[in-house]
Length: 211
Image (cartoon, rainbow, N blue to C red; front, side, top):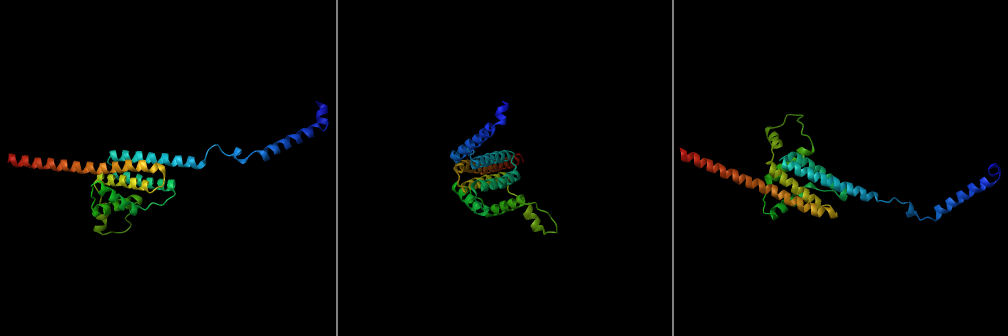
């Protein structure tokens, strides 16, 4: 053992090891050292999972009839879709498309309602602070809101249009589901409204009869 360390055998052994390692490094193809997964695929999967979670949250908020929370989640949903598809989504353009989609379903939303909804969007995206005295008309405009079911239906339809704007295989199926869900919210509102009107008329008739 002592003669091994005293002689040049140690030097030769180390030199051979270095040369062998260098030879393996130079002849081994580069792809052998690549990561076994694609970072881009992982990021995309993360985005889709986050988007699906937001859709679930929007539906939960709609079941609570919380239109403000739905709008807040929709704005977050839009940002995630823009990151997924690397696109910029115009809300004004999507509102026009959503209006057309509603008309195709036999649903007409007046221009005044769209104007109020845009104001609700503006109020949700930034906190309105009264730093100076405003006119009564301005205050009334800020406080205007649509019936919750109408606002939720519009919000879901907008989310559907956002998905169509993103060139990704995941978008189409999710877009169709949200479009149907949004239209159902509007239908439910009008059906409920008709039932209320019918009950009110019957109550009025009963009161007239008993007089």
